Length: 467
Image (cartoon, rainbow, N blue to C red; front, side):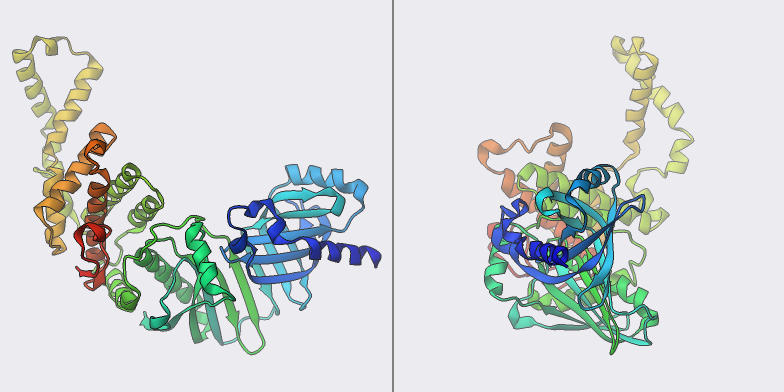
């Protein structure tokens, strides 16, 4: 009994604000959105078990913080340390003090306190349930999401997508404005909003999950930050099942939103309709990943590399999606026809080069193959022509300056590895203009024609533009 009181006291004495993990932003990291305590077992991959008391907390940045008080004698600590060094992954199973079953997976320990028999770390996923019974016929479901923030003037957003009714709300905390202030200042993600569905058939749970994941993906574009699910709560009169998830990315992207809050509902409706209708099957995942990852970076060169790569991925996917006719628009001659004669063509061109330049008479085998590859690339249409074709297909309005700038940035990155404009301080301006053109293209693909804020709004002095 004395042992139990000692370990529970240890849990009480471990303050999050004392952890060295949180020195970057003590205020934000010390805030808990959810917390539960209980008793159970720490399990190693070989099923070795150690009795423990636990506390699991979801921090406001979405991470699952775990404190364990090991229930063993101090002389066994060396054995435990050996297990910790060689028996990853770890999990915890137990019952909390509300008699709910708790399971935490893939735990990484960051600190150990031998004198107190304490372990501190993070988990990837956790589930808390008050029942082992099957789901009832009708349920309510709530997802807490990270990084998407709504202006108080436009909450909640009520929307019907794929036949399901959703409501998106802000989450409020004590001293909420200060919390959000810190998350922006220290570039922390934050559990900031939730998506709710009421009176849903439990048979539709997989469809709901898929729809909410799509909503988060679209909100990531809308706010220029990775938006992902931090937790899911399924509930009914007698059942509560909570799942917590480790955030995928721990740095936020651009501070300003692409879509103003007042237009988010319109953006979601238009985008859902497009990707489930005319553009169903178009794979934009890689494109959007390149785009969002680029926005985390803070240099004109790195941003440009990401955006050029994103546009290349988008162009490639559009050609594939629209079929053989548009895919072959990348070429002057259809590849099937050109490939039948490319060997003869390359041999003829090399003969001409040999006749005019003696250096080509001594070509080695590998050099000759390299030149043939270069000659075969002549069948590709120019990058400018391909971009103009995409803009025409999507009915995007653009200026000659925008197009020339994008091609200039792309060519500098590919051929020189730099923007080469530092002397006239145009590197940032050119990079921002390139990003703005890509964003305009992405929004057109998604079928959105409403208000948005161009990435270079401060250069054009126009904030609320439309596609």
